[in-house]
Image (cartoon, rainbow, N blue to C red; front, side, top):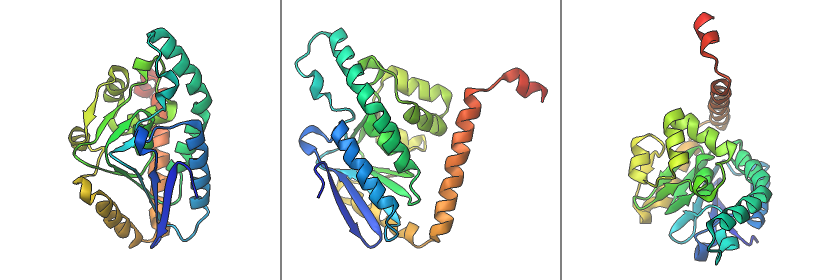
Amino acid sequence: MYTHFLVEKADQIATITLNRPEKRNPINVDMLKEFEVILHDIRDDVATRVVILTGSGNSFCAGADLSIVKGVTDEAEKQRIFAEARNHRIRLIARTFTMLENLEQPSIAAVNGYAIGGGWGLALACDFHLAVPEAQYWFPEVDLGVSLSLGSSARLFSMVGTARAKDIIITCNRYASAELHSWGMISQIVPPEKLLDAARELADRLLSKSPQAVTGSKLTVNTLAAVAAREMSTFDPEVFIHR
């Protein structure tokens, strides 16, 4: 039914699999448009109460599709091409990732390998995060001459705070799942052969709870995180001290 995704619905769970394994499931405009259609369908599907997001092959999502700069050896030209192409994707990324984040249904990222750039941003937009020990994460945007998207920056900041978010984004360092687990960014690390089973077990736990309570709690936490990010962006120490 879909070109870039596999979608399976069963037992009130929708499992969405990014399905470009030959390229490590990178994101391009066509993929984002298709993802938006899938999310619209799930948003309006009362039979679906939990969403699991994973990748085919040995990667979750390799971020932006860099095939557009394949063969370009000049770094300045590579950065120019990448930045120009990114402008076409940025609104779609913001719209689809926000749509995922704001689904009434809770979402579970089952990260089975590389989660790079937009791939890590995709996992950050989910409510729960499971990963295999081999998973690796990094944001290469600054090395590619662009800044990380506002949405992913805000989600990262709400999880790890200002200093660590800057360190992750600006240095472009790579992180193993164990390190992110120690920071509280990943709830479970499970072997590859048990990843989807663990995600479904978590989904079953969520299904055992009141859907209204789950949705309301998710909305409350998302709202508090958004307010905190907005307040920090306009924080004035003098006003805070004297109020």
